[in-house]
Length: 306
Ligand code: PMP
Image 1 (cartoon, rainbow, N blue to C red):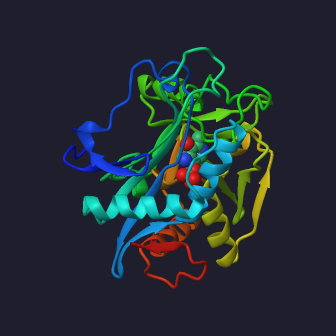
Image 2 (cartoon, protein in one colour):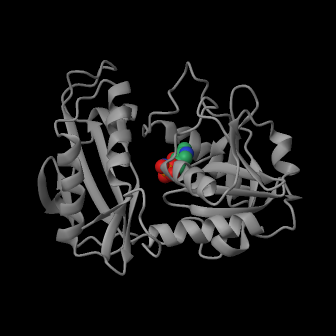
Image 3 (cartoon, helix red, strand yellow):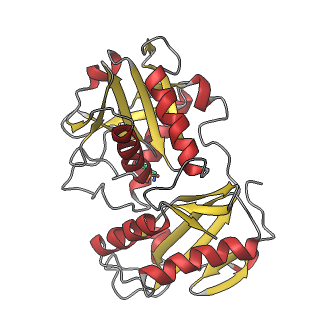
């Protein structure tokens, strides 16, 4: 079992037993995917457990909810406190955190606004999402035959549960063909992102990533890496990226809360650079882990100690 079922879940303001955190099968979210959510991590630093960019994640949750006209009945500060309370009561020092806001049980027409808004936070221990070797060895990925949603179909900047039906198609395609992950193109045929990661490449010592109009999620790790890279003296370009630029790049990597920073060693069986983690990736990755684990000064105030 992936979860510690002895733990507690924050459910509409109350901390209840894991096994009691249930909803009705006729809830709106079960039928129509009516949810928005977040994914954060808490790191066990030498100064104690710290949640990375808590407020930024909760702000993105609020923004996602706003797009879908969901009124979260808690303030940003209350949501931040709730995350900390959930970690505290579960007595866990290092974990993945999943706040989710969804439409509950009332009626089952597509029209959602009469259904109650439910707010839940769960935490569990979760290791490296793409495998322990991924951080050092890099992973083999493919370009998906599934595209990201066009901007006038489903909003990619809102982190909605239903977006992940698209991600699931691409993930299943990748794994059934022997790859670890997919890179999806957008409706223009340009590079968008992975099924749960943003993508970067390095060319002549400069970094490139799709701009936020490229049908991507505005990743918080993406922003962290852009900030770190600039601090380390690298130029960072956010722009439209044709697929073939990834094939000819010196280095390519994924970023995400779950995936952290994972090098990509091949795409569609084309070797990227030397086919292993490149020097720029290594430097930024090491710095990122130093920041996450509070081994360097937290100059942007990104760590929220429990
Ligand atoms: N893109 C998608 C589709 C994602 O699901 C995620 C994970 N939340 C990311 C990018 C990376 O975002 P973040 O760095 O905020 O976790």
